[in-house]
Image 1 (cartoon, rainbow, N blue to C red):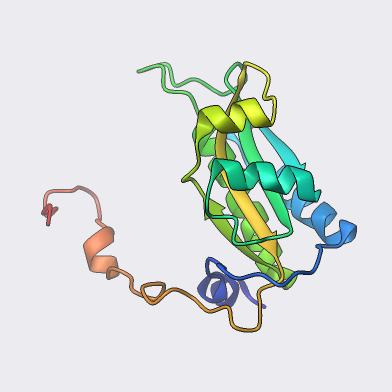
Image 2: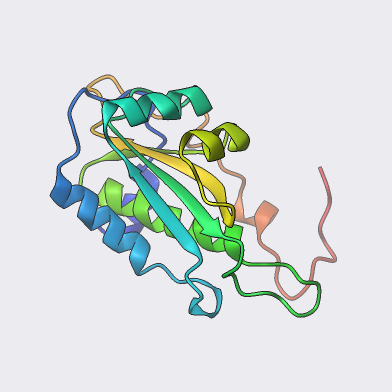
Length: 178
């Protein structure tokens, strides 16, 4: 599948089959995260692979949005490792973790798996239940599995603003906050 088709076809899966994700496919997804670009190539991301039932129940305690996926990746970043912008001290950790998660999400779609990016979770409970060391900041859960036969994109999935509403050339002088 070419990239445009892959990106257009991928959607947040909210119903998964009760079928484990094979180790080879997990490895393929993790490789995609490994090669994702990060600011200054600092690679602050850290990924926890969650696939055992008792650990998946911990995910359920942190968020109601696992949708019974048989695999969850907790994407975090080490607060000590991001590249820091000199002008305002902003760190790249959350952005880097997001880029890594996006690479893995698209790789999952390319190999026939569905996923959902979950940012709605209790970070303190996540930190506690998964025993995150102090410097790690949880950024997102990526829940992954085989979409159920009845899985479908949400109604608003294909609703997109036009390019004219989101893209500006040379300056933002024509920008109007709606």
